[in-house]
Structure formats: structure tokens, C-alpha cells
Length: 90
Image 1 (tube, rainbow, N blue to C red):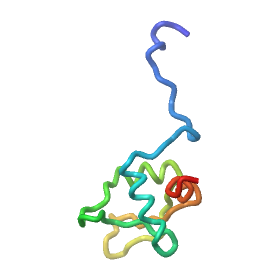
Image 2 (image 1 turned 180 degrees about the vertical axis):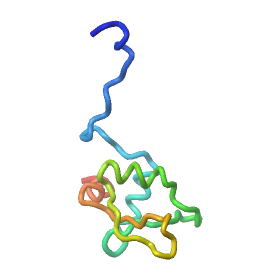
Image 3 (image 1 turned 90 degrees about the horizontal axis):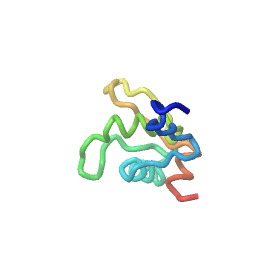
């Protein structure tokens, strides 16, 4: 490896990916909802960060559930098997 590439960190692998505290808290809220539905809002009534949702989707911890015709910019999601395992600590 040449000197120019020594400062490049290896890309995080899928197996090594771990959710942040906010992501894990969001995933855990789906454990007690029918079908593993993930909330659109947090406990204080604030909308869940779109970045939190997108990262969880990208890692396969959540998946889109259905399109919301009233609010098309809101992505309604549910837990995947992988997300459920993370949320329960399995």
C-alpha cells in the first residue's frame, strides 16, 4: 500500500454495523407495535429524524411498510428480522 492510502479507514462491513443510541431506541419502539410498526414521532412528539430512518433502512434493520397518502413525504416503516434481533439483543 502506498503512503497516500495509509490514512484511509476500511469501510465498515455489514456484519460490524451497529446502530447508534437513537437508531436503537427507534427500533426498540417497534417491538411492542402490531407488525413491528416503527413510530413516526418520538416520545416528545418530535418527528423521527429522516437520517435515522434512512440509515436503518440502508442496513436492513427496517423496511418500508406502506405509502402514506396523506403525508407522502413520511415513510412508514416496520422492523425486519435483523432489526428485531438488534432491538432485543439477540
